[in-house]
Length: 508
Image 1 (tube, rainbow, N blue to C red):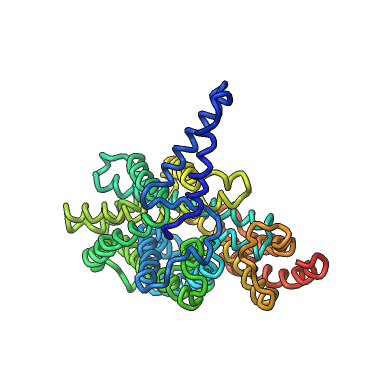
Image 2: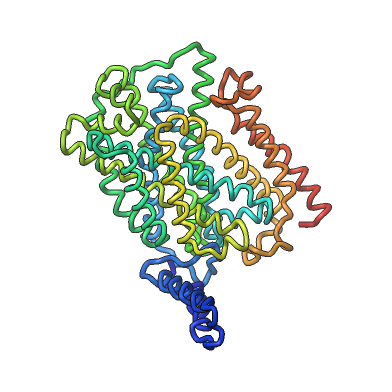
């Protein structure tokens, strides 16, 4: 983060006039109250390490100089944020939910993780180029007003993932205590730590991710060492050839959705990079951090799932909760294993902080009035909402995983299809004026993007396979979840002609 923040200066200046206002204006004490609130806000935003900036564009003159340490830090950020137990729990679903063997689950996890990581890596390149947050960048591709749809969906997505993180973190802490610590208390503990770091913003967030990585990776390797002998790499997939093929595609898609979910926030973490930073470098930094982390935890989750069939202790623990299963994996280490389990539980904090941070920025992007609310206040509101949802949904983790993740994963990839086509087909020769991020007369009207987005959703509905709904195309595919693939196909086909027509009629 840059040292000179123009927003802090503006806020400090804004507090002077009310403080020195004539006494005649204070007959009802209202100006005095306003002055006190403004003064408190200025003091909060003046704290060391506090990021006052919201969605305002970071000018090229405000960027940090290029450095190897910054590159390493952002790579480690992606890695640290995603070697968390909520992502590990996704790997469990291959054998447990879809009935896939170890090899099939592992192949789907690795390939799905790669595809989802590539999507996020592509969206990350717009941060240095524009100095704008991801949902602000989206205005250049979908228009000022239509871009609010994916912005709102991104808030829902980030809140949903954080809710899942809180639940699993609470489950692990409860299991470590032998049930004496309720899951509800564990959820509150996780939420408080997330709130503190998310409120301070980018600088504190990077420090936390950097130092939390070391114990996280160490305890994961400890888990591999003590639980690995119980993994069963010989398990076979269940069902006939058609069923297995459908389950492979469904699990691969699920493994794609999770790293892909970061795409709607990817450029948020690169806005302080120099404007002319190599796009290939940004792409590879993001891809490496994401794919390595997801591959590690996916495979570890798959291994734990394969051991349940032969390890009665694991089976009994899994019947209690996913968190209890992870604690059981450390079982042979007794007291030290419980300590490791606590460290693993804290990994959900590293995963929830960036989600809460980006969701707060998303609220500011929704409109003029939400933008006036400081980012740290939105972060506070979001943590309270996430904590409440986690407390209410703590008994329904698998239902949230199997339904929410897939449902929210569709729209992100559809949005990326529109971004890629707008850039390659319509913007390469015209370029972008990144200073006009709030200029409604410059930004696209976005009707073509909105129509393509909705058509993409139509395709996703036709191809989705969920507990509560099975689309007709999913039935034709042998009950495979083909929603994201059909949805992207619909968007890719409909956007170019509609955008061409929009340019001919409206001109922008």
